[in-house]
Image 1: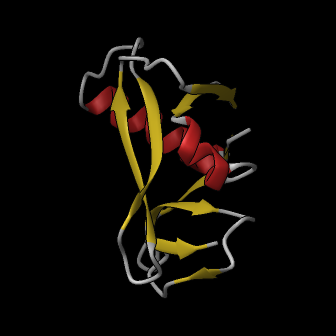
Image 2 (image 1 turned 90 degrees about the horizontal axis):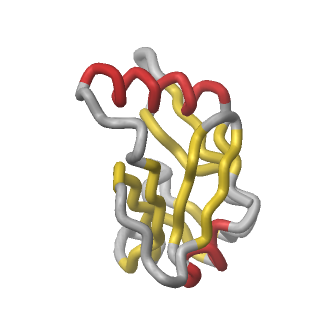
Image 3 (image 1 turned 60 degrees about the horizontal axis):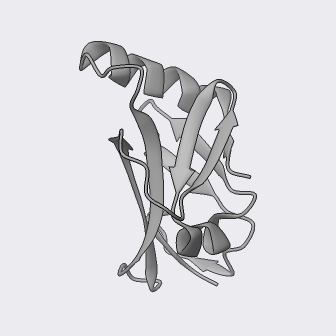
Length: 108
């Protein structure tokens, strides 16, 4: 399961509304190589499912990830923090053994 915090849900709805993104688009999250800790998160809107996608819905938000990324993202919570010290979307990942200072990359 990939969880969606209320803060992330509100920001996703705001982005969807302001950019006229249709309801058939979902949030796709994945893990890619790179970043100072070795792995980085990637997130975007998408409307095309792939054969081995893992599909979740939490807090009214549909989240899709590929099977390989899901192994790194299991029980992760997507959060959003705004304001002066906010860093935007972030992943609270219990599987990460090390993260970088900016929170953009991690290691397992």
